[in-house]
Amino acid sequence: MNNELKLQLQAHFDGELSEREARRIAELIVADSEARALASELRMTKSFLTGNEPEAKLTESREFYWSKIERDILRSEAASAATLAESGFNWRRLFAPLTGLAAAVVLCLGALHFSDYALFSGSLRDLAEVENESEHMGSFSFRSDSGNMFVVWVYERAVDTEPEPEVQAIDNDLLF
Amino acid sequence: MATRKDYTKLDDPALVKAAQRGDMRAFEELVARHRDKVYARAFSMMRNEEEATDVSQEAWVKGWQRLKQFQGESSFVTWMTRIVINLCLDQLRKHKRQRAESIELMEEESGGVERQMPTVTINPTEGLERSELRARIDRALNQLSYEHRTVLILHEFEDLEYKEIAKRMVCSIGTVMSRLFYARRKMANLMASYKREELS
Image (cartoon, rainbow over all chains, first blue to last red; front, side, top):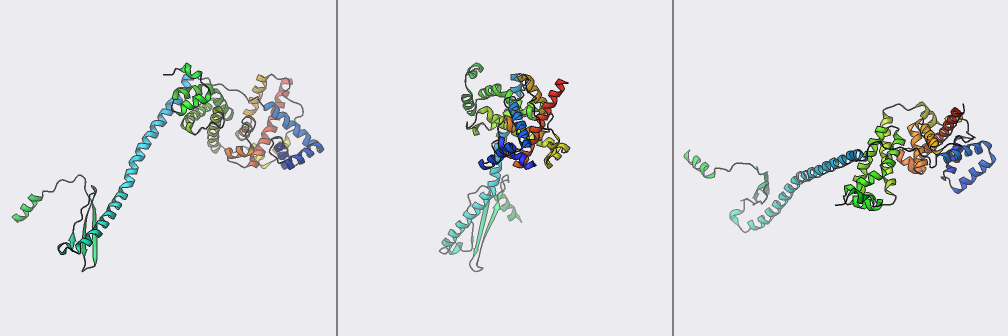
């Protein structure tokens, strides 16, 4: 008997063969004494193993065994809560540039609207400041029909900048 | 608030439902009921008390974390046993990476090593009491390589099909068949040798 046949013999006992293959192996068992002996050994091994799995019992008390499980569960829940909180923070960071981009688009649209208005307003034709409601972004736009150009400056507003001493600066300038 | 005694009156499905709602005391009762079975499976695969205890506890933690995924297609203890088996397989794979393949396994993988084993014709377990039979099976399992032992346990004690074993052990069905064949033949021969020891 070759190795393949032996494995098929085993598969026959485990119910893993097709009907046709199973018939072929059943015929082999009848005809071949080696196959018959092997089949008998496989059957015997299966029968003494069935229902006789060795038993093992924990020596630790219920309380002690559970305490480690409980501790690990609580620790993992605390860790996943912290991860969730952190991932929320990351989302905000991820969205910051997108917010900036959206603000720039809004500014461009606003500027386009303004350019229509400028056709009727000669004094504002060349230079204009477009107001931006964003706390983090500021912008200026410049349009020149003669130069055939339209420029938008977008800048980040510093959060902690000190208020500019507007009046004082003008006065100082006047002193020179 | 329910006492521990109240939980002991509930059946597994009721405890599972309560645990799925976040009731940790219900889960504790499930652990108390099935801890030996889960540990026994871990021990049969790991063959080390300390490691089996650690892996079984890890399995319970995973069980709690995945409890919402449990739909009740199988019994709760079967579901838990599958979790501990997967953890044992992960652990054993790590061990395997740390040691060289046994010559026995390499020979077996190349096929034909069992040819040297005589076919056992007389039942070596005849007349044994159940406790003695189990003790001998345990002794024989201990003498198998982890690959052979695992495939035997998954097939004979967990009733998994070749395909399912191959998936879990990350190997081909052919490898499962050849390991199972070798493991069975080795078991038969070991049991026969214990019988001879007893008689001599």
